[in-house]
Image (cartoon, rainbow, N blue to C red):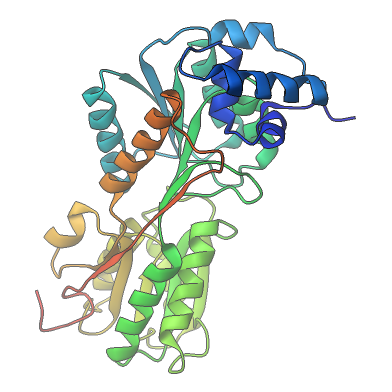
Length: 339
């Protein structure tokens, strides 16, 4: 029989996982009536008190953890800076880890952060993270946490992200208005939730002009930005090149622009190119890259504030989902006469 977890106790008592964690630490931030209800749920479920974990969580270290998938992508860099700034404003020190999109490495990082007694973690999950991976590393020790940018299907937690489906729709509508009839999508891990949502939104925005993607080329990791061979594959699948190529993120899109030029095709004039995230380079390249702004700094601040609320005992009983409304930034890569 499966051993009850903090998540089970929280559901039984009608409180958040962070509240259960605070009860385990006998925090004076939790009313006695709530403590009694939570302890009653523990008894009813047969929850086994993990004393070693509780001892690790028994005081505030004034440190927060942040684990991201990689640090090469400027989106992650901007998000990281925002988390650091918001944590610093409340006199917390930030410990940073990079999973390199490896679930085992992520697991090791989270366990190490628990051992180092960080008060809570903002996590941008590695691709293919399963609920069991987070239950084993976060729920078992009662670590308050917030997921950012990527959801983990089947796992309930506070979560902050741009609305990727809406972002895809904005871009699809723009390309449809620009006359695109053949569209390729490049990059992103095939089964990642953000990728699936961006493609679904893109196709919805392109309808009825485009029935489907002319070619869809996923990558093994989101860090695979520089891949000129991708352009060869796209052109090979669509003789003469498609009307538009959409990168999973701006780093793919910027790489595609360079690769097109190396083959004598001018972005914006011969092939429209667009991406997602609105990283700083998107505006400074020539032509400027059309992209959908996902506001990484806002996401970082919102995720940190949710975590700080949880540490202060202010987390609601149900997980909160913060969805940031995206904004389309139109530039010369899809509008040839605009720079």
